[in-house]
Length: 324
Ligand code: PMV
Image 1 (tube, rainbow, N blue to C red):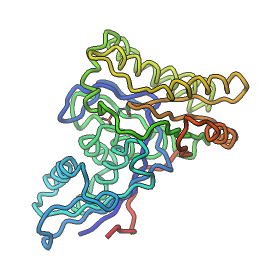
Image 2 (cartoon, rainbow, N blue to C red):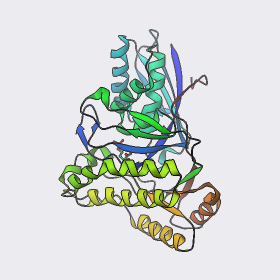
Image 3 (cartoon, helix red, strand yellow):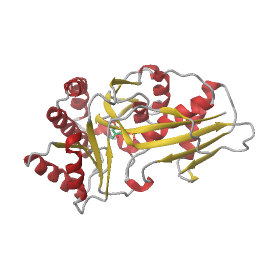
Image 4 (spheres, rainbow, N blue to C red):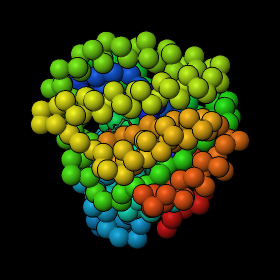
């Protein structure tokens, strides 16, 4: 049986950083994100007795993440009670070398396509729990729109739910690629250091309040407060990284230059605010009526190699357009 799914990537507005269970990928804190409509993974999974070996193809070539993908397929096989070999073909609508993490969209699409191909009927919650075990942030790409992922002690309690639909608020996230180099410290390794920061406990204690605040900003569509909150949250995340042992510096000079440009544009009246994950690239939010001017400003900078314009997106969905 063959099934195909498409899933969006998501950007965390209140970030997940630090795990309390490495194997189950249970996060130290709850997080809040929005799905992105222009960073999409499409994946076809087939389980068939005719297959002699497991095969994982990414953008036309054998995947470098074959082992991690097959581990996840193993979880699906276990639920379905099957031993059949599998073929997985996956492609992204954004360049692999863009320096944008694709594990969220990738593992969300793999989870939905894999479950459908194995003919197991899972609820949205169960799909989110399963996706989380492949890649933490992937659980947030299952439900639609603006999403909250709960921290919990038990696997079945740590999943993501939609808080606002994709159409609730017409805002825009422009990804500004300043570097497409692979990062020195992958986020999985970086997260292990989170607890070594002396400020980590304070961060964790303040997260529930922060999530309430961000939900209120989105509910009221208060863009200025929303922007201030996501930008200060990103700075806090990077403060944790910088004060870990050993310190983690994910930014490069272009990242800092861009932060300064954005501050300057704000002074001139353009309401734009950034957030940054475990890497040097920026996600810059603005309201839709300002998207064109922000995109033009970014494109004019020599520091920016590429921009990708996103709006809030639906969650993972099945598709009948198979990749093989
Ligand atoms: O999903 P991972 O293990 O690659 O961790 C990603 C963590 C951040 O992107 C920095 C924050 C988040 O919540 O997505």
